[in-house]
Image (tube, rainbow, N blue to C red; front, side, top):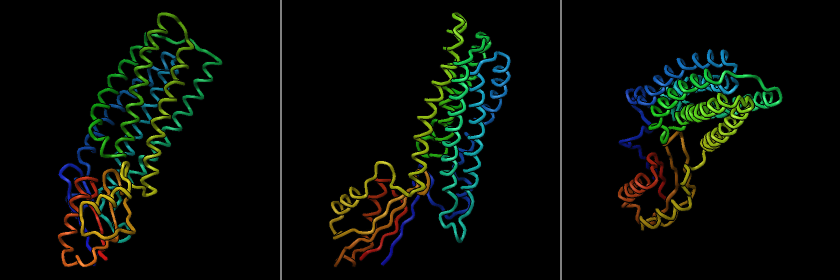
Length: 303
């Protein structure tokens, strides 16, 4: 006897059959991304001009990094639009995984940015160049203000959406780099230690790499259909047996992530002579999975 369950969480979007719900998918995240793209695109132009005028590698690298952020935001936004499309006969879960592919792409993009900034930093260490410290400082302050605004806009959506988290990490990395550049510009203005500029660029690249690695790891785990972080299948099985005494055995249990905060479970559960109470048992199983592990889409076969 097979049973399935599909419920909606009051705070997070899950697998939906309704076209209206699909069109509303991640509506808040879409609006936040659009606003952040507009802000980022505007300041990116300012930083490019400022970097050229001041001859600052740190500022130019920050401007280039901001361009990658703008591109990453566009990728994230496009992924949400595609994920909102209707499921079809051969993509029965819809296009939600496009968001994870976008997160993976963003992490690879961050790796490329890291490599470029590191290379340029080493070149500047070997051949230092003069820099206009005051102008560098003023442009960096503008970039910092905009980055802080963008981080605050996206912050509330990062916990539930790996795709948006990828865009958020881009903005957070740029915020940190802006802070470092502001400090470096002050030091450079008073000391004329031009070597500060490439050292800052190298330091920024290392921070970006660490964040990119975390995003890459999470995206790969989801694409490999690993269990949600913090969910151990043996613990879930033991908990079910403890809380639902009618369960005599569990086998072929699988728990995986479809996209951010969209978890699925399949399992064969033995209940022996309790089959006449199967509906009640199923209800209790689903309630436990939902409340304790946020698993809201289940397919359970009673043996």
